[in-house]
Image: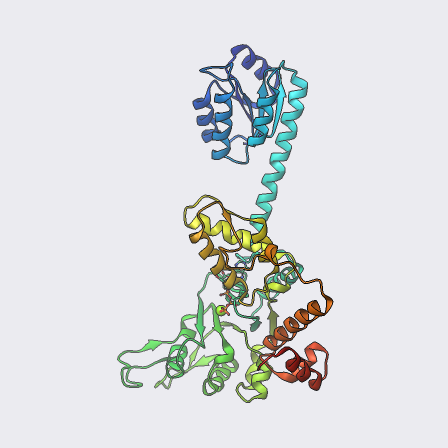
Length: 447
Ligand SMILES: Nc1ncnc2c1ncn2[C@@H]1O[C@H](COP(=O)(O)OP(=O)(O)OP(=O)(O)O)[C@@H](O)[C@H]1O
Ligand SMILES: [Mg+2]
């Protein structure tokens, strides 16, 4: 409750005076530490005034400081204003060091204390509003963390396309959150209360994939003992997510194309056409135009699937997202393992920021999960993340060396991006093919 003020004070005269001075608040009084803790649990006050001299020995601040610590452990966001006797400046400073919001020296001047309380309440409200806003934003983003301009524009496109029925192709390197985005599209669509069914084309052997997608009738093949619906049928009314579409065997591509055009399926061994209403979302980390060029992917299917293309940028290109995501993942991991909150050391943050993240957020999840299990203290080090400690290894200042490192990184990145297509890579880097071959040679890049 925002208008509630908890006053922890053992002197009945002062209690009365405070109650009278701050009658615009709903006042709760606690006489000692145990009453104070009970009141914090019960009312969760935003602001507390705490007399450091509490019973059993009011001449000593130890009970007051212990109360302070206990409240902050229970409710870290509480703004605690410590009230001390005139000659007790050291204790007041000690209290602020422990996390008190401010201190106030007796004798009581209601006007001054009133201003401090008012300011504490304002700050507390601001903090709560801020947290609420962040939570709202996260909900809207369906667990997709990140405030970089790159991800904001992905989220904007997502919000626009989700309510439509358009087929969506999501492209991005492995671990960039393609499946997470597919689920977000479903959750933001009118089909959100219907099924979201995912099939990973790369994970299922070709001979099983067809029946997995389309289902089969009893007796369609040896072992087909009963009629079985396919995944597409299960998605009826909802969203069908075809993951790793670049790995869909060529033979099945024609069959999928037919389904997309006609919106009917036939189970294996069946003769009946079954109409299915699904929204199709697919994803791949591969470069489909190259696969088409090589004859491994049908151009007509590609054009059908790519009505709308959403490209998720790799983590290393998202400005400012690395630490936001890392901190969120660290907090989530600690909570899931019932551990006290941990933090990254300064050199760990530096290492996280400077690492290239070839495996993107999935790799980050793995590194952080492992570090949380291994770490014995509240701080996670670069070593526990198995990242290079850059503090030990300063950046080279030699220009030639810097240029070589930068060029090698850019070339490798472009190669990955184009699935090792040389002419695409050369185009992306803005150099001619012979120059590119020269660079491969110079930096010992093997294809
Ligand atoms: N922006 C993000 N915020 C928080 N978690 C994320 C984010 N992006 C991805 N993740 C998490 O990272 C992991 C990998 O995401 P996801 O499986 O969606 O990626 P993918 O692109 O499909 O990867 P792959 O190519 O490995 O299949 C998941 O556990 C996902 O929850
Ligand atoms: Mg995936």
